[in-house]
Amino acid sequence: MATAVVTGAGSGLGRIIARALLADGYRVALAGRRPEALAETAEGAGGALVVPTDITDPAQVAALFARVRDAWGRLDLLVNNAGEGGPAGDVDEISVEDWRRTVDVNLTGSFLCAREAVALMKTQDPRGGRIINNGSISAHSPRPQRAAYTATKHAITGLTRSLSLDGRPYGIACGQIDIGNAATDMTAPMAAGIPQADGSVRPEPTFDARHVADAVRYMAGLPLDANVQFLTITATTMPYIGRG
Image (cartoon, rainbow, N blue to C red; front, side, top):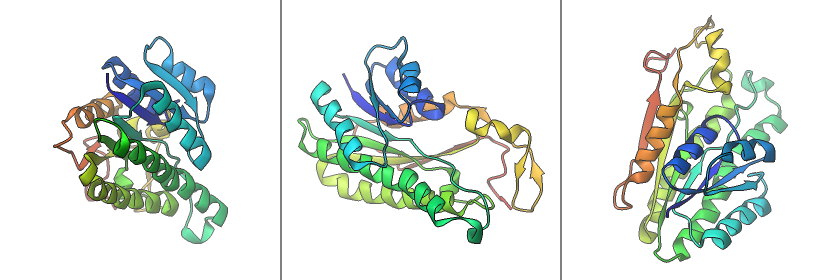
């Protein structure tokens, strides 16, 4: 039976992805900061391991993967999903504290989880596994006044490429899913209108977040000699292609 770690599993896309993997028969370690929310994700599902974790804390991340190793003996899939939107404002209005917090969660947290996952995947028998990073369409094109978030998501693309290259000798594949306007609590304000590059405020369309889970399931289901390097999924009419 395949095993997985999903970060940010207490809500939103993380919950939807984790539940889809559980439905497919994975044993899934649910990581996130809120124990109650993780328990809600796990409710009614066999094979779930609830591991409250702050992914910005190296010791807690190490403990998460140690739990997986001790419980299941191996790790087949890491979904690096956890992240936050970061501060809004022109770059001179963003505090250093808010910048560092966004980098810690979105970038360093993904690095810490990948670091532990790779260490386990390199030494387990059979060797290898897969990492799927949640990028964002902001890894390609920024929204206005979102410098911290955009910078971290561009950096995730670099992390994905480096993991893909360095993982080759060990049978470790790494891909990235870039998501635009999946319908979750986080994107609910889009219906009322959000700032655009031309200075206007307009509503934006969303799409059913279950399609994101289906995309992750496809990426995860490939044999390790095949990899979806980058996959972009968006609401068809959202302002992304030609944004601004």
